[in-house]
Image (tube, rainbow, N blue to C red; front, top):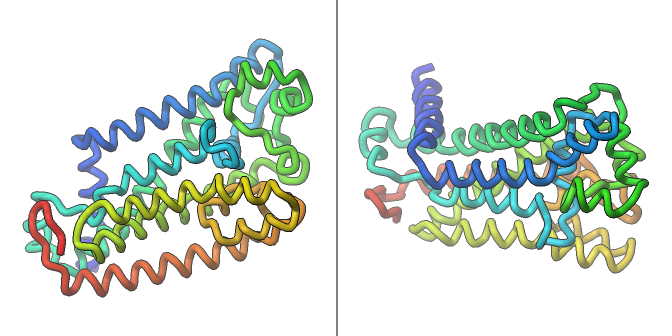
Length: 297
């Protein structure tokens, strides 16, 4: 029990450091502006036209990113890479934390912090998307008349009210919003955690900050590249299997998008496998890693 308390204390200490970390504030402020810019128009459209919208809109934020320039999803994931860019989170507090908790509890706490930080960031995005449409929210099992009218109506209205927010027609026709929200939340949390752990593992292996963030960023930018390749034809959709960031877009699932081989079971198993391998490496590396302020070797 003492080891669990120490692990939890380290994880919570990292979250508490957000209050004085301007980098974290910048990420949350910019992501909030991005979500509001993308979704506030949907609530305004509902008020003006007397239409409703489901509050489970997180899947739209993680929609297809084949056009990276206007992709909300890509900007969200780049925010995640910035959030965890300082892994393995060495600071002036680390020596005193190590003295109180020992190295094993410290590294477990930093790993748990990545999972906790990913969940908090995803909860923040979910709450913002709900608040944007709260005046016209409907908790029925359908996506809502606002979305259906914008999907099938005038393209000018779509540009005016939901600029850069994708409306995946196949997803809205085949999947209830509650199921889509649950899928996006689970895979989003796993993908955020995977990128954070990847950043931590690579930085620890390299002995400095930077390489892990670069690799995580490359995986994020691989998503629109794979989406572009998949647009060549149904047979090319198999490339989604090799892009972990693409797995959070539910419209890429088998049965939703033609030709896709991606399934929820595949995404979940591969995320868990990658996460387990990264945790194993991090724990092994932490046993021999020298820790100094401002430097990891």
